[in-house]
Amino acid sequence: MKEKLKGIFSVYIVILLLPYVCTILFTGSIDRAENTNNSDDMTVMVQYNGNFYEMGLEEYLTGIVPMAMSIDYEKEALMAQAVIMRTNILRQLMEANANGEKIIFDEEFVTYDEMNTIMSESELKSNYAKLEGAIKETQGIVAFYNDSLVELPYHSMSAGMTRVGEEVFNSGEYGYITGVESKSDIEGTNYLSIKTFTIEEIIQKCQAAYPDIIVTGVNDAENVSGKKTGNEESSTGDQTEVENQNGDPAVSQEGNQSDDVITVDEIPMNEVDAAAEDMVGAMETEPSSETETGVGEAAVTEEAAETAVNGERAGNAAWESQITIPMRDSAGYALQVQVGNTMIPAEKFRSLLNLNSSCMDFLIVEKGISITTKGLGHGVGLSQYGANEMAKDGSTCEEILSCYFSDLQFQEYDMK
Image (cartoon, rainbow, N blue to C red):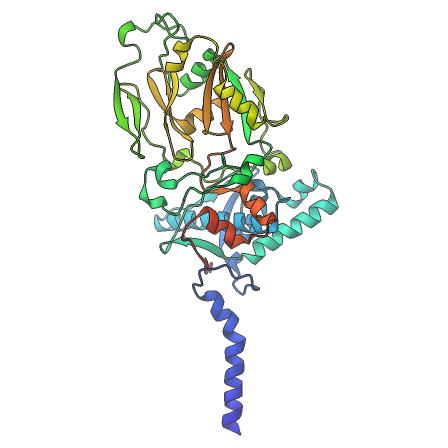
């Protein structure tokens, strides 16, 4: 009888501990069961409103996830965002610890009370409960690639196709960032944007970072900033054929050049969703002298954009050889922009002109140059708009992440 009782008791213990054993094993999928691991045992140092605070990692996520993705989004999309941001934070912590350094996080942070000033109480309660559920159900879950924590970039919406990490960064370390179709993005309100700049505006904005730029005018006697070119015959430098990482020929300028490849620093991991910016007022676009459509107004139609790109070109054709896009990746995003005698990384050019995307086309018009962009953000990694549309169609958090990133493994990391 005693032996029988021992056997029953042993079976009971195994059944009782089974969920705990499962959670600590490397399962390769996201476990939605109630977590026994208290990841708030890991704390982070946060700078907020000029003060420093120490808080649990999961608590910190409740303040930064809504700054990256609107809490109006579907729960599964918010879960995917939480896994991404938790992974990126933990990776930074581990790198800092390995180097004997301390790290203070200063990402945009929003409190419940702050959100309550721009949302009704009932709306906020519902959405905030969804946010807390998304974080709790993924508590401690991070993503690994080849047994290592990885950087997981995200952006608001792609140009219909996300970018290949190896093409963008020219490195095999980003093999998990594959280019995938994200067709729902083309339906987004901010998908298309057209801005028109004068030639002088473009040169002045670019010269803020590249003061030695020389762009020749119609008569090839002086550049648009009024500086003499010096040697009219070679004012744009000698051109040589080079190849980009796809093996496509591209024109490079000898002499005044910027870096030939985009660096990780030039593609921020944390480009936030436009809906999140609107919700919390995190960013306000300053008025500029260039004209703009499709941002804050009715969206530009695909047909109108196509007409703008392929329509009759006005102005002097000489400018077309002065401001060009000699290199693109397989998703159609510019890698380099040639401005006069200088090659500028496309993401840097985008930043200088405050453009929505580096998936861009130029059109010479009477007022200067019209720049059409597709998508919103750098186009690398997760498309937040696409993730939300997938969630609306019933995709799970894991399915969303596995769509935009290849061969990831999901593990509940021991935060203690």
